[in-house]
Image (cartoon, rainbow, N blue to C red; front, side, top):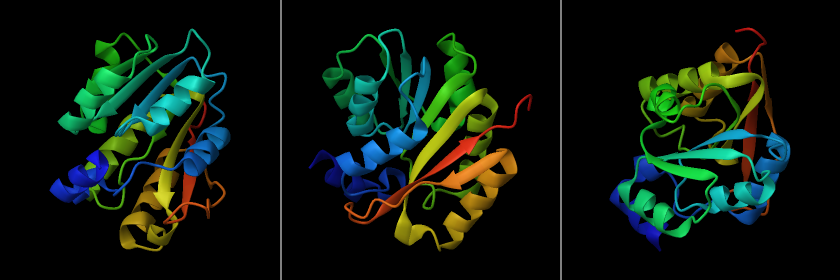
Length: 194
């Protein structure tokens, strides 16, 4: 219900009526290959569905920085996530570079996201993708969920072009048909030395 209420309050910012399903999360994290990651950033943590699954897969010495702009979600996450590996930060993904610096982190192994790319303003989308490309380590990966039915929209096509302009390798993961609406993930790797 919390997700639905926040969606109704600001649909462009929340972007979904419900949290990501276990099927989409499993597919996202499997394809992102997070198991050995030591430093992970999560963009758009929401109510923590991905965060909890991520923590189950990461090693004991991993560090997770979860960014969320919705103050209700931030308060809920801080109350419910009792794990020393995760820090919940009330910040925009566009401020990723500054947030990492404040937390003494440089480049990271993985950036995981479920933010609503197709409903946000194009300038903000570009700022976030640029920030992500700057902080992903040479052998790191950026993985983000996308609704399959949105893939043909102008916003999604623009997002796809943006990813391909900032990352050396971009591919789409498998479609999760058990989810409604069906989902897939984009996976991106930064060219070495860039």
